[in-house]
Length: 167
Image 1 (cartoon, rainbow, N blue to C red):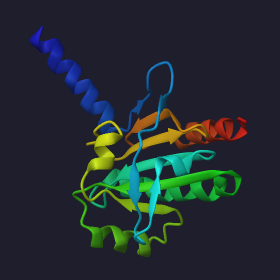
Image 2: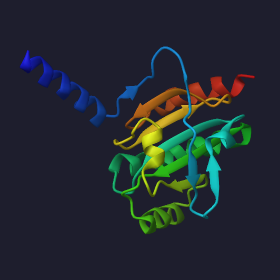
Image 3: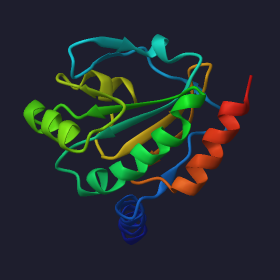
Image 4: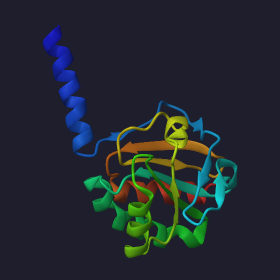
């Protein structure tokens, strides 16, 4: 029995390491009420996202997978932002704000970047500890999919297309 538990833990760890997709249960869940503090000092709330399909990405400058996937997230934003798609990158509480600002400026990230200074946003969104963790929120403010690790961007684009087409 002990061996099966270790094997299961190893499979889960390997899945996370290679960018496994985690799908929420059979339905959807409402995105948690959160206030995001953006780099410019302004605030955005979960309620502000309603009416748009939104990608919420929890990341860190010290996370190699996060850094590697960022050009794809930028390309996804660029492809869909004119059609009611929003991206919100939430830097983890342990990420030094100066690193986040530097990364955002040097990479010219075109979407909103927030710093989760207290960890309250990550906690509200399912106690996010692993980065990258990405949520896709539909126009009604419901989380329809989550990814731990880099998403399959072809599949992600198909999902975004479907969600944008919804009334």
